[in-house]
Image 1 (cartoon, one colour):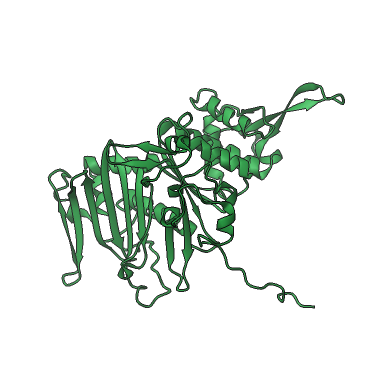
Image 2: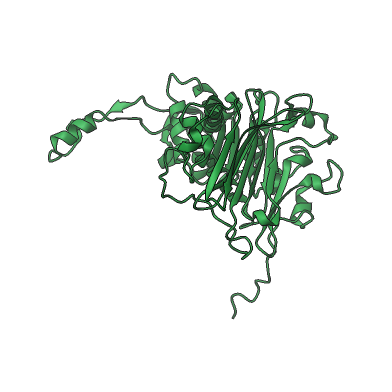
Length: 432
Protein backbone atom coordinates (compact mmCIF):
# COMPACT_ATOMS: atom_id res chain seq x y z
CA UNK A 1 0.00 0.00 0.00
CA UNK A 2 1.23 3.46 -0.86
CA UNK A 3 1.43 5.96 2.01
CA UNK A 4 3.31 8.89 0.47
CA UNK A 5 5.33 9.94 -2.57
CA UNK A 6 7.62 12.99 -2.71
CA UNK A 7 9.66 14.52 -5.51
CA UNK A 8 11.71 17.69 -5.95
CA UNK A 9 13.87 19.01 -8.77
CA UNK A 10 15.06 21.94 -6.71
CA UNK A 11 16.52 20.71 -3.44
CA UNK A 12 18.07 24.06 -2.52
CA UNK A 13 14.59 25.57 -2.22
CA UNK A 14 14.06 23.23 0.78
CA UNK A 15 10.77 22.31 -0.78
CA UNK A 16 9.27 19.20 -2.29
CA UNK A 17 6.02 18.07 -3.86
CA UNK A 18 4.37 15.44 -1.66
CA UNK A 19 1.25 13.39 -2.36
CA UNK A 20 -0.01 11.72 0.81
CA UNK A 21 -2.62 8.97 1.05
CA UNK A 22 -2.84 9.35 4.83
CA UNK A 23 -6.36 10.12 5.97
CA UNK A 24 -6.83 13.53 7.57
CA UNK A 25 -8.56 13.86 10.92
CA UNK A 26 -11.92 14.92 9.51
CA UNK A 27 -15.44 13.56 9.66
CA UNK A 28 -17.86 13.93 6.78
CA UNK A 29 -21.56 14.57 7.18
CA UNK A 30 -22.08 11.30 5.32
CA UNK A 31 -20.76 8.58 7.66
CA UNK A 32 -20.93 6.02 4.86
CA UNK A 33 -18.41 8.10 2.88
CA UNK A 34 -15.86 7.77 5.70
CA UNK A 35 -16.49 4.04 5.98
CA UNK A 36 -16.11 3.40 2.26
CA UNK A 37 -13.31 5.79 1.29
CA UNK A 38 -10.89 5.13 4.17
CA UNK A 39 -9.38 1.97 5.60
CA UNK A 40 -7.61 1.29 8.88
CA UNK A 41 -4.04 -0.01 8.69
CA UNK A 42 -3.28 -0.06 12.42
CA UNK A 43 -4.10 1.91 15.56
CA UNK A 44 -2.10 4.89 14.30
CA UNK A 45 -2.68 4.92 10.54
CA UNK A 46 -5.68 5.25 8.22
CA UNK A 47 -5.23 5.46 4.45
CA UNK A 48 -7.36 6.71 1.57
CA UNK A 49 -8.63 4.41 -1.14
CA UNK A 50 -8.53 7.07 -3.83
CA UNK A 51 -7.20 10.53 -4.61
CA UNK A 52 -7.96 12.91 -7.49
CA UNK A 53 -5.41 15.43 -8.79
CA UNK A 54 -6.68 18.55 -10.60
CA UNK A 55 -4.79 21.31 -12.33
CA UNK A 56 -4.47 23.39 -15.45
CA UNK A 57 -2.69 22.14 -18.57
CA UNK A 58 1.10 22.32 -18.18
CA UNK A 59 0.78 22.60 -14.39
CA UNK A 60 2.85 19.50 -13.70
CA UNK A 61 0.20 16.78 -13.21
CA UNK A 62 1.64 14.33 -15.72
CA UNK A 63 5.18 15.17 -14.58
CA UNK A 64 4.26 13.93 -11.10
CA UNK A 65 3.20 10.61 -12.63
CA UNK A 66 6.33 10.53 -14.81
CA UNK A 67 8.50 11.13 -11.73
CA UNK A 68 7.00 8.14 -9.93
CA UNK A 69 7.30 6.05 -13.09
CA UNK A 70 10.97 7.02 -13.44
CA UNK A 71 11.68 6.28 -9.77
CA UNK A 72 10.03 2.86 -10.11
CA UNK A 73 12.03 2.05 -13.27
CA UNK A 74 15.37 3.08 -11.76
CA UNK A 75 14.75 1.10 -8.57
CA UNK A 76 13.97 -2.04 -10.54
CA UNK A 77 16.45 -1.76 -13.41
CA UNK A 78 19.44 0.44 -12.61
CA UNK A 79 21.72 -2.45 -11.61
CA UNK A 80 21.10 -4.60 -14.67
CA UNK A 81 19.88 -2.49 -17.58
CA UNK A 82 22.31 0.42 -17.46
CA UNK A 83 26.03 0.66 -18.18
CA UNK A 84 28.63 2.54 -16.17
CA UNK A 85 28.89 5.28 -18.80
CA UNK A 86 25.15 5.90 -19.13
CA UNK A 87 23.57 9.03 -17.73
CA UNK A 88 20.67 8.85 -15.29
CA UNK A 89 17.54 10.13 -16.96
CA UNK A 90 16.64 12.82 -14.43
CA UNK A 91 15.53 16.27 -15.51
CA UNK A 92 16.83 19.13 -13.35
CA UNK A 93 14.72 22.22 -12.78
CA UNK A 94 16.27 24.51 -15.40
CA UNK A 95 14.05 27.58 -14.97
CA UNK A 96 16.27 28.80 -12.14
CA UNK A 97 20.02 29.37 -12.33
CA UNK A 98 20.13 28.48 -8.64
CA UNK A 99 18.81 24.98 -9.13
CA UNK A 100 19.63 23.77 -12.65
CA UNK A 101 22.72 21.95 -11.36
CA UNK A 102 21.02 20.52 -8.28
CA UNK A 103 20.18 16.81 -7.96
CA UNK A 104 16.59 15.57 -8.13
CA UNK A 105 14.97 14.14 -5.00
CA UNK A 106 12.64 11.10 -4.85
CA UNK A 107 11.09 9.39 -1.83
CA UNK A 108 8.34 6.85 -1.30
CA UNK A 109 6.72 5.58 1.90
CA UNK A 110 4.83 2.30 1.68
CA UNK A 111 3.61 -0.80 3.52
CA UNK A 112 4.93 -4.25 2.64
CA UNK A 113 4.04 -7.38 4.60
CA UNK A 114 2.63 -5.23 7.41
CA UNK A 115 5.93 -3.31 7.68
CA UNK A 116 6.29 0.39 6.83
CA UNK A 117 9.31 1.52 4.83
CA UNK A 118 10.68 4.88 3.71
CA UNK A 119 13.01 4.74 0.72
CA UNK A 120 14.52 7.53 -1.33
CA UNK A 121 17.46 8.85 -3.30
CA UNK A 122 18.93 12.02 -4.81
CA UNK A 123 20.57 11.88 -8.22
CA UNK A 124 21.87 14.05 -11.00
CA UNK A 125 22.53 12.88 -14.54
CA UNK A 126 25.94 11.44 -13.69
CA UNK A 127 25.52 9.76 -10.29
CA UNK A 128 23.46 8.91 -7.25
CA UNK A 129 24.27 11.54 -4.62
CA UNK A 130 22.50 9.93 -1.69
CA UNK A 131 20.22 6.98 -0.97
CA UNK A 132 18.45 5.67 2.12
CA UNK A 133 16.09 2.99 3.39
CA UNK A 134 14.32 3.06 6.74
CA UNK A 135 12.00 0.62 8.44
CA UNK A 136 9.34 2.58 10.31
CA UNK A 137 7.55 1.81 13.55
CA UNK A 138 5.22 3.98 15.57
CA UNK A 139 8.13 4.85 17.87
CA UNK A 140 11.23 5.15 15.68
CA UNK A 141 12.91 4.76 12.31
CA UNK A 142 15.44 1.98 11.86
CA UNK A 143 18.09 2.85 9.28
CA UNK A 144 18.60 -0.20 7.04
CA UNK A 145 21.18 1.49 4.84
CA UNK A 146 22.47 4.95 4.03
CA UNK A 147 24.54 6.17 1.08
CA UNK A 148 26.36 9.50 0.89
CA UNK A 149 28.55 10.95 -1.86
CA UNK A 150 31.57 12.95 -0.69
CA UNK A 151 32.57 15.75 -3.04
CA UNK A 152 36.13 15.92 -1.66
CA UNK A 153 37.02 12.30 -2.38
CA UNK A 154 34.60 11.77 -5.27
CA UNK A 155 33.48 8.56 -3.60
CA UNK A 156 30.34 7.28 -1.95
CA UNK A 157 30.05 5.72 1.49
CA UNK A 158 27.36 3.06 1.86
CA UNK A 159 26.67 1.85 5.38
CA UNK A 160 24.15 -0.97 5.76
CA UNK A 161 22.80 -2.59 8.90
CA UNK A 162 23.09 -6.25 9.85
CA UNK A 163 19.37 -6.63 9.24
CA UNK A 164 19.76 -5.59 5.61
CA UNK A 165 22.61 -8.12 5.12
CA UNK A 166 24.35 -6.58 2.11
CA UNK A 167 28.00 -6.69 3.18
CA UNK A 168 30.41 -6.18 0.30
CA UNK A 169 27.79 -5.05 -2.20
CA UNK A 170 28.79 -1.42 -1.86
CA UNK A 171 31.90 -2.29 -3.91
CA UNK A 172 29.66 -3.66 -6.68
CA UNK A 173 27.48 -0.54 -6.84
CA UNK A 174 28.22 1.79 -9.72
CA UNK A 175 27.83 5.53 -9.24
CA UNK A 176 24.85 5.57 -11.61
CA UNK A 177 23.10 2.55 -10.03
CA UNK A 178 20.97 2.32 -6.91
CA UNK A 179 22.26 0.25 -4.00
CA UNK A 180 18.76 -1.14 -3.48
CA UNK A 181 18.70 -2.43 -7.06
CA UNK A 182 22.15 -4.01 -6.72
CA UNK A 183 21.16 -5.61 -3.43
CA UNK A 184 18.09 -7.20 -5.01
CA UNK A 185 20.21 -8.52 -7.86
CA UNK A 186 22.43 -10.27 -5.31
CA UNK A 187 19.47 -11.80 -3.44
CA UNK A 188 19.31 -9.52 -0.41
CA UNK A 189 15.92 -10.56 0.95
CA UNK A 190 14.52 -7.15 1.97
CA UNK A 191 15.60 -5.55 -1.32
CA UNK A 192 14.07 -8.40 -3.34
CA UNK A 193 10.77 -8.08 -1.51
CA UNK A 194 10.66 -4.32 -2.06
CA UNK A 195 11.34 -4.55 -5.78
CA UNK A 196 8.89 -7.44 -6.20
CA UNK A 197 6.26 -5.35 -4.41
CA UNK A 198 7.08 -2.35 -6.60
CA UNK A 199 6.83 -4.46 -9.77
CA UNK A 200 3.59 -6.22 -8.87
CA UNK A 201 1.70 -3.68 -6.78
CA UNK A 202 2.40 -0.22 -8.19
CA UNK A 203 0.77 0.02 -11.61
CA UNK A 204 1.16 3.21 -13.67
CA UNK A 205 -0.94 3.68 -16.79
CA UNK A 206 -2.03 6.43 -19.17
CA UNK A 207 -5.49 6.78 -20.61
CA UNK A 208 -3.92 7.79 -23.92
CA UNK A 209 -1.75 4.68 -24.37
CA UNK A 210 -3.80 1.50 -24.39
CA UNK A 211 -1.74 -1.10 -26.28
CA UNK A 212 -0.29 -2.96 -23.32
CA UNK A 213 -3.55 -2.66 -21.38
CA UNK A 214 -5.56 -4.20 -24.21
CA UNK A 215 -3.06 -7.05 -24.46
CA UNK A 216 -3.57 -7.85 -20.77
CA UNK A 217 -7.37 -7.71 -21.08
CA UNK A 218 -7.12 -10.07 -24.06
CA UNK A 219 -5.29 -12.57 -21.84
CA UNK A 220 -7.98 -12.17 -19.17
CA UNK A 221 -10.66 -13.12 -21.69
CA UNK A 222 -9.18 -16.54 -22.46
CA UNK A 223 -11.47 -19.38 -21.46
CA UNK A 224 -9.37 -20.63 -18.54
CA UNK A 225 -8.47 -17.22 -17.03
CA UNK A 226 -9.81 -16.64 -13.48
CA UNK A 227 -10.73 -13.00 -14.25
CA UNK A 228 -12.73 -13.73 -17.39
CA UNK A 229 -16.23 -13.50 -15.87
CA UNK A 230 -15.39 -10.38 -13.83
CA UNK A 231 -13.98 -8.56 -16.86
CA UNK A 232 -17.05 -9.36 -18.95
CA UNK A 233 -19.45 -8.31 -16.18
CA UNK A 234 -17.59 -5.03 -15.67
CA UNK A 235 -17.81 -4.12 -19.36
CA UNK A 236 -21.47 -5.20 -19.64
CA UNK A 237 -22.55 -3.11 -16.66
CA UNK A 238 -20.99 0.07 -18.01
CA UNK A 239 -23.83 0.28 -20.56
CA UNK A 240 -21.90 0.10 -23.80
CA UNK A 241 -24.45 -2.09 -25.56
CA UNK A 242 -22.02 -5.00 -25.36
CA UNK A 243 -23.62 -8.28 -24.31
CA UNK A 244 -20.52 -10.46 -24.38
CA UNK A 245 -16.79 -10.47 -25.06
CA UNK A 246 -14.73 -13.26 -26.52
CA UNK A 247 -11.33 -14.06 -27.88
CA UNK A 248 -10.22 -17.11 -29.80
CA UNK A 249 -7.53 -19.41 -28.34
CA UNK A 250 -3.98 -18.95 -29.50
CA UNK A 251 -3.33 -20.51 -32.88
CA UNK A 252 -0.25 -21.31 -34.91
CA UNK A 253 0.57 -19.37 -38.03
CA UNK A 254 -0.17 -21.42 -41.15
CA UNK A 255 3.06 -21.31 -43.14
CA UNK A 256 1.21 -22.53 -46.23
CA UNK A 257 -0.42 -19.12 -46.44
CA UNK A 258 2.93 -17.35 -46.59
CA UNK A 259 4.50 -16.20 -49.88
CA UNK A 260 6.52 -18.98 -51.50
CA UNK A 261 9.67 -16.88 -51.84
CA UNK A 262 10.16 -16.62 -48.03
CA UNK A 263 13.31 -18.54 -46.97
CA UNK A 264 12.70 -21.93 -45.35
CA UNK A 265 14.56 -20.95 -42.17
CA UNK A 266 12.21 -17.99 -41.69
CA UNK A 267 9.20 -20.20 -42.39
CA UNK A 268 10.37 -22.59 -39.70
CA UNK A 269 10.67 -19.78 -37.18
CA UNK A 270 7.26 -18.38 -38.10
CA UNK A 271 5.68 -21.82 -37.77
CA UNK A 272 6.51 -21.72 -34.06
CA UNK A 273 4.85 -18.35 -33.54
CA UNK A 274 1.46 -18.45 -31.84
CA UNK A 275 -0.92 -15.54 -31.80
CA UNK A 276 -4.27 -14.65 -30.32
CA UNK A 277 -7.26 -13.45 -32.31
CA UNK A 278 -8.52 -9.91 -31.61
CA UNK A 279 -11.29 -9.32 -29.09
CA UNK A 280 -14.83 -9.72 -30.41
CA UNK A 281 -17.82 -7.90 -28.92
CA UNK A 282 -21.39 -9.16 -29.23
CA UNK A 283 -24.39 -6.87 -29.84
CA UNK A 284 -28.08 -7.63 -30.15
CA UNK A 285 -29.76 -7.44 -33.58
CA UNK A 286 -33.46 -6.56 -33.84
CA UNK A 287 -36.09 -6.81 -36.61
CA UNK A 288 -38.38 -4.05 -37.90
CA UNK A 289 -40.82 -4.67 -35.04
CA UNK A 290 -38.09 -4.25 -32.42
CA UNK A 291 -37.96 -7.94 -31.55
CA UNK A 292 -34.62 -9.56 -30.76
CA UNK A 293 -33.34 -11.67 -33.64
CA UNK A 294 -29.73 -12.70 -32.92
CA UNK A 295 -26.33 -11.71 -31.61
CA UNK A 296 -23.96 -10.02 -34.01
CA UNK A 297 -20.18 -10.12 -33.49
CA UNK A 298 -18.09 -6.96 -33.87
CA UNK A 299 -14.31 -6.67 -33.88
CA UNK A 300 -13.30 -4.36 -31.04
CA UNK A 301 -10.49 -2.54 -32.85
CA UNK A 302 -12.37 -2.09 -36.14
CA UNK A 303 -15.96 -1.47 -35.11
CA UNK A 304 -16.10 0.02 -31.60
CA UNK A 305 -15.66 3.66 -30.56
CA UNK A 306 -12.46 5.00 -29.00
CA UNK A 307 -14.22 5.25 -25.64
CA UNK A 308 -15.35 1.63 -25.80
CA UNK A 309 -11.83 0.53 -26.72
CA UNK A 310 -10.49 2.33 -23.67
CA UNK A 311 -13.04 0.79 -21.32
CA UNK A 312 -12.35 -2.72 -22.59
CA UNK A 313 -8.60 -2.08 -22.47
CA UNK A 314 -8.63 -1.00 -18.81
CA UNK A 315 -11.18 -3.61 -17.69
CA UNK A 316 -8.58 -6.35 -17.22
CA UNK A 317 -6.12 -4.19 -15.26
CA UNK A 318 -8.95 -2.78 -13.09
CA UNK A 319 -10.10 -6.26 -12.12
CA UNK A 320 -6.52 -7.30 -11.36
CA UNK A 321 -5.92 -4.20 -9.21
CA UNK A 322 -9.10 -4.70 -7.19
CA UNK A 323 -8.62 -8.45 -6.76
CA UNK A 324 -5.07 -8.14 -5.45
CA UNK A 325 -5.05 -4.95 -3.38
CA UNK A 326 -2.68 -3.09 -5.70
CA UNK A 327 -2.18 0.67 -6.22
CA UNK A 328 -3.10 2.18 -9.58
CA UNK A 329 -1.65 5.51 -10.74
CA UNK A 330 -3.81 6.68 -13.66
CA UNK A 331 -2.74 9.62 -15.83
CA UNK A 332 -5.28 11.11 -18.29
CA UNK A 333 -7.96 9.20 -16.40
CA UNK A 334 -10.99 10.87 -17.98
CA UNK A 335 -9.76 10.92 -21.59
CA UNK A 336 -12.44 9.35 -23.84
CA UNK A 337 -14.64 8.46 -20.85
CA UNK A 338 -18.12 9.78 -20.12
CA UNK A 339 -18.24 11.46 -16.66
CA UNK A 340 -20.68 8.83 -15.37
CA UNK A 341 -18.31 6.03 -16.33
CA UNK A 342 -15.40 7.85 -14.68
CA UNK A 343 -17.55 8.17 -11.56
CA UNK A 344 -18.47 4.48 -11.66
CA UNK A 345 -14.80 3.47 -11.80
CA UNK A 346 -13.97 5.69 -8.82
CA UNK A 347 -16.87 4.16 -6.91
CA UNK A 348 -15.39 0.70 -7.47
CA UNK A 349 -12.46 1.79 -5.31
CA UNK A 350 -14.54 3.85 -2.83
CA UNK A 351 -16.54 0.83 -1.76
CA UNK A 352 -16.40 -1.84 0.89
CA UNK A 353 -18.25 -4.22 -1.40
CA UNK A 354 -16.11 -4.04 -4.56
CA UNK A 355 -12.79 -3.07 -2.97
CA UNK A 356 -12.37 -5.81 -0.40
CA UNK A 357 -8.56 -5.72 -0.49
CA UNK A 358 -8.09 -1.95 0.00
CA UNK A 359 -6.75 -1.22 -3.45
CA UNK A 360 -5.84 2.41 -4.13
CA UNK A 361 -6.57 4.65 -7.10
CA UNK A 362 -4.64 7.88 -7.70
CA UNK A 363 -5.73 9.64 -10.85
CA UNK A 364 -5.03 12.81 -12.81
CA UNK A 365 -8.12 14.44 -14.28
CA UNK A 366 -9.86 17.53 -15.63
CA UNK A 367 -13.32 16.05 -14.99
CA UNK A 368 -14.86 18.56 -12.60
CA UNK A 369 -18.08 16.51 -12.44
CA UNK A 370 -16.23 14.28 -9.97
CA UNK A 371 -15.71 17.17 -7.54
CA UNK A 372 -18.59 16.13 -5.33
CA UNK A 373 -18.92 15.78 -1.57
CA UNK A 374 -21.03 12.69 -2.28
CA UNK A 375 -18.03 10.99 -3.89
CA UNK A 376 -14.95 12.34 -2.08
CA UNK A 377 -13.78 13.58 1.27
CA UNK A 378 -11.74 16.80 1.34
CA UNK A 379 -8.48 14.92 1.88
CA UNK A 380 -8.99 12.99 -1.37
CA UNK A 381 -8.96 16.14 -3.51
CA UNK A 382 -5.58 17.51 -4.60
CA UNK A 383 -4.64 20.51 -6.73
CA UNK A 384 -1.45 21.22 -8.62
CA UNK A 385 -0.32 24.52 -10.14
CA UNK A 386 2.78 26.43 -11.19
CA UNK A 387 3.75 29.84 -9.92
CA UNK A 388 5.19 32.61 -12.10
CA UNK A 389 8.67 31.09 -11.73
CA UNK A 390 7.52 27.74 -13.16
CA UNK A 391 7.70 25.97 -9.77
CA UNK A 392 5.01 23.34 -9.19
CA UNK A 393 3.02 23.25 -5.97
CA UNK A 394 0.80 20.33 -4.94
CA UNK A 395 -1.70 20.87 -2.16
CA UNK A 396 -4.79 19.27 -0.66
CA UNK A 397 -8.28 20.71 -0.29
CA UNK A 398 -7.82 20.07 3.43
CA UNK A 399 -5.57 23.14 3.52
CA UNK A 400 -8.59 25.36 2.85
CA UNK A 401 -10.59 26.53 5.83
CA UNK A 402 -13.95 25.32 4.65
CA UNK A 403 -16.38 22.88 6.20
CA UNK A 404 -15.63 19.22 5.60
CA UNK A 405 -18.43 18.94 3.04
CA UNK A 406 -18.46 22.49 1.70
CA UNK A 407 -16.72 22.15 -1.64
CA UNK A 408 -18.03 22.02 -5.16
CA UNK A 409 -17.23 21.92 -8.85
CA UNK A 410 -18.53 25.48 -9.18
CA UNK A 411 -16.10 26.83 -6.58
CA UNK A 412 -13.18 25.18 -8.35
CA UNK A 413 -14.16 26.60 -11.75
CA UNK A 414 -14.45 30.06 -10.17
CA UNK A 415 -10.84 29.75 -8.96
CA UNK A 416 -11.54 29.44 -5.23
CA UNK A 417 -8.97 26.66 -4.88
CA UNK A 418 -6.52 27.81 -7.57
CA UNK A 419 -5.06 25.28 -10.03
CA UNK A 420 -7.04 26.59 -13.03
CA UNK A 421 -5.84 28.21 -16.26
CA UNK A 422 -6.03 31.99 -16.54
CA UNK A 423 -7.23 32.48 -20.10
CA UNK A 424 -6.47 35.87 -21.62
CA UNK A 425 -8.63 37.96 -23.93
CA UNK A 426 -8.98 35.99 -27.17
CA UNK A 427 -11.26 38.46 -28.93
CA UNK A 428 -8.42 40.15 -30.86
CA UNK A 429 -6.63 36.94 -31.92
CA UNK A 430 -8.35 36.69 -35.31
CA UNK A 431 -8.96 40.19 -36.63
CA UNK A 432 -11.23 41.36 -39.41
